[in-house]
Image (cartoon, rainbow, N blue to C red):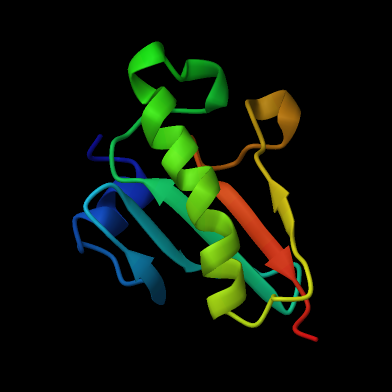
Length: 107
Protein backbone atom coordinates (compact mmCIF):
# COMPACT_ATOMS: atom_id res chain seq x y z
CA UNK A 1 0.00 0.00 0.00
CA UNK A 2 2.44 2.63 -1.25
CA UNK A 3 0.09 5.57 -0.63
CA UNK A 4 -0.75 4.57 2.97
CA UNK A 5 0.97 6.90 5.42
CA UNK A 6 1.06 4.25 8.15
CA UNK A 7 2.60 1.67 5.79
CA UNK A 8 5.23 4.26 4.92
CA UNK A 9 5.95 4.71 8.64
CA UNK A 10 6.28 0.91 9.04
CA UNK A 11 8.71 0.89 6.10
CA UNK A 12 10.64 3.78 7.74
CA UNK A 13 10.00 6.00 4.72
CA UNK A 14 8.41 8.57 7.05
CA UNK A 15 9.54 9.50 10.56
CA UNK A 16 7.53 8.72 13.68
CA UNK A 17 8.11 8.98 17.43
CA UNK A 18 8.02 5.23 18.04
CA UNK A 19 7.31 4.06 21.59
CA UNK A 20 6.94 0.32 20.89
CA UNK A 21 7.72 -2.06 18.04
CA UNK A 22 7.83 -5.77 17.49
CA UNK A 23 7.53 -8.00 14.44
CA UNK A 24 3.77 -7.53 14.14
CA UNK A 25 2.91 -4.06 15.42
CA UNK A 26 4.17 -0.54 15.82
CA UNK A 27 3.11 2.16 18.28
CA UNK A 28 3.96 5.83 17.88
CA UNK A 29 2.88 9.25 19.12
CA UNK A 30 0.01 10.90 17.26
CA UNK A 31 1.22 14.04 15.45
CA UNK A 32 -2.07 15.80 16.26
CA UNK A 33 -2.74 14.68 19.85
CA UNK A 34 -6.13 15.14 21.47
CA UNK A 35 -4.86 14.17 24.94
CA UNK A 36 -1.58 14.65 26.86
CA UNK A 37 -0.69 11.07 25.85
CA UNK A 38 -2.05 10.08 22.45
CA UNK A 39 -0.54 7.01 20.83
CA UNK A 40 -1.47 5.00 17.76
CA UNK A 41 -0.97 1.23 17.74
CA UNK A 42 -1.01 -0.26 14.24
CA UNK A 43 -0.51 -3.70 12.76
CA UNK A 44 2.42 -3.87 10.38
CA UNK A 45 0.14 -5.82 8.05
CA UNK A 46 -2.13 -3.43 6.16
CA UNK A 47 -5.88 -3.73 6.31
CA UNK A 48 -8.12 -0.70 6.03
CA UNK A 49 -10.23 -0.91 9.17
CA UNK A 50 -11.81 -3.14 11.75
CA UNK A 51 -14.62 -3.73 9.25
CA UNK A 52 -12.02 -5.24 6.91
CA UNK A 53 -10.53 -7.62 9.50
CA UNK A 54 -10.70 -11.26 8.52
CA UNK A 55 -10.46 -14.47 10.54
CA UNK A 56 -6.71 -14.61 9.89
CA UNK A 57 -6.32 -11.27 11.72
CA UNK A 58 -7.98 -12.54 14.91
CA UNK A 59 -4.85 -13.64 16.76
CA UNK A 60 -3.01 -10.44 15.80
CA UNK A 61 -5.90 -8.26 16.98
CA UNK A 62 -5.95 -10.17 20.27
CA UNK A 63 -2.22 -9.65 20.77
CA UNK A 64 -2.61 -5.95 19.97
CA UNK A 65 -5.37 -5.54 22.54
CA UNK A 66 -3.28 -7.34 25.16
CA UNK A 67 -0.31 -5.07 24.36
CA UNK A 68 -2.34 -1.86 24.87
CA UNK A 69 -2.24 -1.88 28.72
CA UNK A 70 1.53 -2.49 28.72
CA UNK A 71 2.15 0.37 26.28
CA UNK A 72 -0.19 2.62 28.28
CA UNK A 73 1.63 1.86 31.55
CA UNK A 74 5.04 2.43 29.95
CA UNK A 75 3.84 5.84 28.76
CA UNK A 76 2.57 7.12 32.11
CA UNK A 77 -1.03 5.90 31.99
CA UNK A 78 -0.94 3.39 34.86
CA UNK A 79 -4.00 5.05 36.44
CA UNK A 80 -6.11 4.49 33.34
CA UNK A 81 -6.52 5.20 29.67
CA UNK A 82 -9.06 5.23 26.86
CA UNK A 83 -8.90 3.25 23.62
CA UNK A 84 -10.63 4.21 20.41
CA UNK A 85 -10.91 2.52 17.02
CA UNK A 86 -12.55 4.69 14.37
CA UNK A 87 -13.98 2.51 11.62
CA UNK A 88 -14.85 3.87 8.20
CA UNK A 89 -15.46 7.40 7.06
CA UNK A 90 -18.77 7.51 8.95
CA UNK A 91 -16.94 6.43 12.11
CA UNK A 92 -14.45 9.26 11.87
CA UNK A 93 -11.57 7.26 10.41
CA UNK A 94 -9.10 9.49 8.57
CA UNK A 95 -6.22 7.11 7.82
CA UNK A 96 -7.41 3.88 6.26
CA UNK A 97 -5.02 1.49 7.99
CA UNK A 98 -6.43 -0.08 11.15
CA UNK A 99 -5.18 1.74 14.24
CA UNK A 100 -5.98 1.81 17.93
CA UNK A 101 -5.82 5.17 19.68
CA UNK A 102 -4.46 5.01 23.23
CA UNK A 103 -5.35 8.21 25.08
CA UNK A 104 -4.93 9.55 28.58
CA UNK A 105 -3.46 11.94 31.08
CA UNK A 106 -0.55 10.81 33.25
CA UNK A 107 -1.41 10.69 36.96
